[in-house]
Length: 499
Image (cartoon, rainbow, N blue to C red; front, top):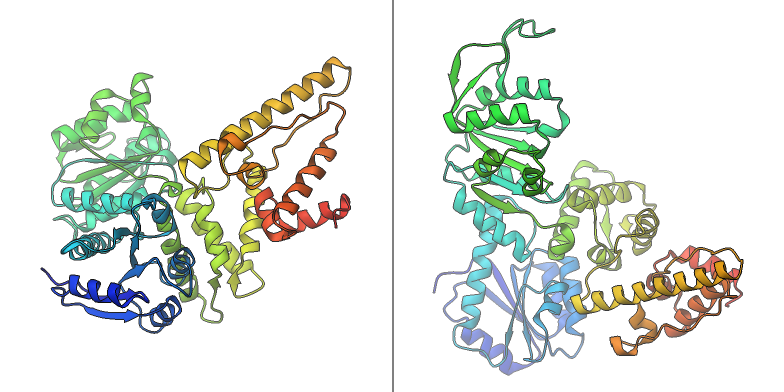
């Protein structure tokens, strides 16, 4: 069995567990240590640092869920293997930050295989320079390393802010032309005439302002890589010329008559669905097939939440490196909320939030309240977007059903008001998680009858009171469930005299 690089910590208070795991790892030449309790593992993690943790879920001093959250908060790049029962759902543990699971007693060489796989994936990510540990990102890293040594054209798709240029740079970094230029062009930011000149260059006098000959990026990147970002925004006239360049490997400067041979690799990216653009006649079908020989789809950040803690720590590390006078950090509660937020702006939005909050926060740590205020503001700005993820698909579906029923109830009330000659009124779903009040199963959900005479304030008062009762008066928990800030909740408690 090949050597696994780095350090491994086995965490369990069960001597049989420790013994069996060590026997299972006997062929691994890594630095293997043990901890008999969760608290001891956290202390060793802080003092020494480990690449892999093998954790027994049946710890006496701390729950496995709480320990996993603390590990992720303190050392997000550490890979975690958790021993679970056959009844446990692997998906729920993965959402907390567990990289892989296994059942006890162990199968022969099971941990060897799993550690080898995790080490290989981690090596791929390091080679690509990608920050994260989600299965989706690991798959992308593997694809990058497979296609990088070739000269094949690659189309990278994904929402805005997901890091498509980073993937393109990873392809170039691992290619045979990594010592040659990498030039990125934002096609959506340039006018048609400017883009053509930027790509292919122009001759002196070819248009007003062309006072001298200018080489385009296809010449400047000779032997290297060109990254065409937002390629879906290119106009049809430029699409024709780009297709000719890709097929014939030669360009002609704007206003020129001489063909120039070029040797470059083209990578492209878009946040649009080009198949739709093709059907609508806005993008050439032959160009689409030419640039999309290999496709890499970068999923949104909300679908790879295991990457969020690593990104957060990296962004804070960069801020601290640029600000020697003060060191910033983040609390465990704040990080937990960041993981649950849906991040419509993806990695770019997360980075902007960390940078602004670190600079503007009064303390030296980003607190949970800072995140709650940000979420509350953006919940108001984006009422139709889901605010929190991190739940199972079934729970999310149940909540959507609950919200739909609540909206239907509101429409019925408004219709009653209109028929009775009253103002229809407005209705705003407060953000209450239905399982917090009506039970954990969909069959327990109840949409209560509401009299048409009741005002929105009456509904809100009852709603807040019910949530406060459910959490035994804990205002922080109540604010989180209601989807509002604590200060807002305090004002409403005073307003409705709910003390």
